[in-house]
Image (cartoon, rainbow, N blue to C red):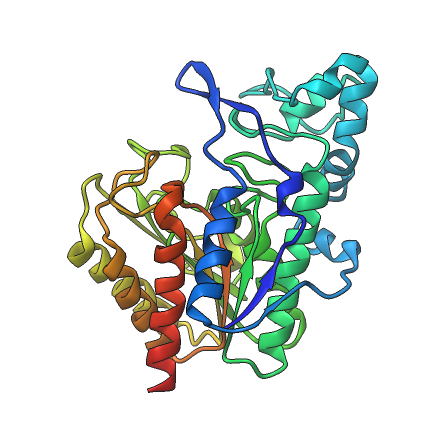
Length: 349
């Protein structure tokens, strides 16, 4: 399994996030990727490469230009407000809600911070843009390797991406890496791409980006939004709109779900992908479905991730894996690499 590694991911290292009414140390930490990298190297699963040179203009294929401009310059603006801000992360504190305008771009930095975000749990710091931009390059490069003939490739990066929409960040995500990979596959001529999100949390950003498109089919298995973040998307009746009607497939599951039920939902998602005749697959690989994860509620065990990888390989599609969530840091490496190993073993068999 070829891995494209974000060697700049540690530039993004948040101090605190807002969690259930208090500031707490960030769950999304560099050790997440470090554990996965160590496990890949320990098992000798395949080469690690840094991403190819990447044209940032490609980000505008999935993100709004005014949003990209804001994220690229947000840290400098934050420090310009007050030089002492250099010692603390930026977090939003205002948001437009129903009846308020979002078409007019405020001059106020805090107002724009709120306009382009949807939670207070995603700190932005000096290295956030560089890490996120390099992560997008990893996803794009992994897609290029698959386009070039690799059966599969893995973009090992953070911050994650699947909560980032066309013009908003949140859920620890700034740039939607899975969407970047899917768009790269489309641009290379794949008629229809499937994005399958197996993270515990619904990929609301990915859904929003492709919701009205029929050339990218989105499927997601996740905690029920009635009880779990991101709360406001992820219901089963969200089937797409316009040209995209029928190309969005949500499978929300109850807290406490074990692997047998989860695997049945995965089969339903893969059956849907086969039905739309997808020519390539992007997997948003979150392993916060693990029973020991501190911010999730499913009960998958480490060996279950081997079976997950086998099931994904049976789809028979060129596949790009993009690393997303997983916060039980000591186990995240084993679980993520189990998926890749299960995939490789099944694909080779």
